[in-house]
Amino acid sequence: MKRMLKKIRVTPLAFESLGVRSMCTYVETPDVRILLDAGVSLGPRRFGLPPHPREYQALRSCRERILNYAEKADVITVSHYHFDHHTPSYTDWAYNWSSAEIAEKIYRGKILFIKSYRSMVNFSQRRRGWMFLQTGGSHAERIEVADNRSFRFGDTKISFSEPVFHGSENSPLGWVIMATITHNGERLLFAPDVQGPISNRTLQIILSERPNLLILGGPPIYLADYRVKSENIQSAMRNIRKIAEEIPTTILDHHLLRDEGWRRLVEPAYETASRIGHKILTAADFIGEENRLLEARRSRLYEEEPPSREFMKWARQHPRRRKTVKPPI
Image 1 (cartoon, rainbow, N blue to C red):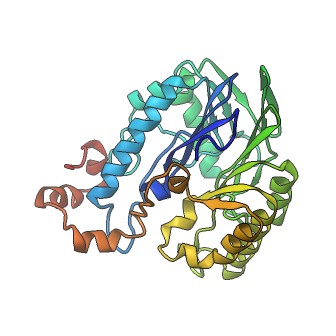
Image 2 (cartoon, helix red, strand yellow):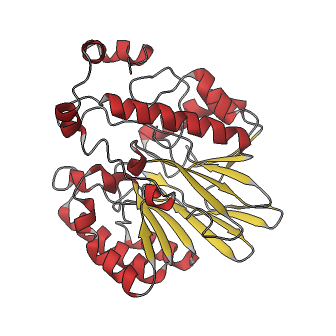
Image 3 (cartoon, rainbow, N blue to C red):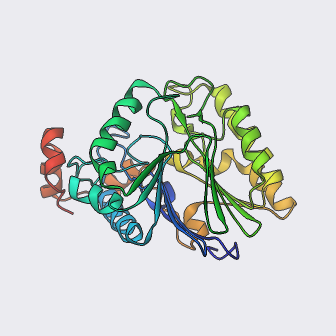
């Protein structure tokens, strides 16, 4: 599947369908090698439980994959400053598998295209963005604030959207930037954390780009009627169906796959896509791997594969202590 585009090569590295929180993707054209959103995380607690050892194995594996592809990359993007979309420079083996050394390896000598941390940003991401530039980002060869800007590498153009909402209109989570990579008439659009999109304005931007391949963050249905209004989830589902009508191939993943019942809710979009010869895939589907919804299955994993006594002893430590010591997996 990763050869679906003839000139733009796309390799998903870390997604919920691969067992972690992330949308990290490697993209290569004849002109430039791009690593989109080089972050990966685990959900701290689900179903009253910390991550299972299987989740830590996936986290470690995905982090190693990101490091390997970062070595190849010329450009790394930061769509926003959540830790599943960029790598912090502090030591945290509990949730991000991160350290100052890891961040330096990823960002050293790279061209960074980043979301502005000064405008269209909430307080939390403003602080994290500033900190990133003082730490991991300081190792970059060049840093460009990318909001609503375009950059060219030979016959490849990388264009970034205006800041769009992280989910619903006026979301307290702030804004993100989407990236479109164009080469030789082919167009890839990377739309992280737009959550469906919920916003109709974001949908309009996505459709106006007319991508051959869209990498899309779905809505957080596991938070429905808790942190996300049900009408926003319904709006996201309608917009996914519109996308299925217009865009030939969509990789649909991220927040959506934190719930095992995700496929049932988007079945109308799958039916629409199938009827007109379009495709909706998870990142795992795209690379021919099995979907591994580990966070969504966390409670079952604890029942079916009880962790070792050593792991549970580690997991019961104070969170600050857990971050400094790798889990016994």
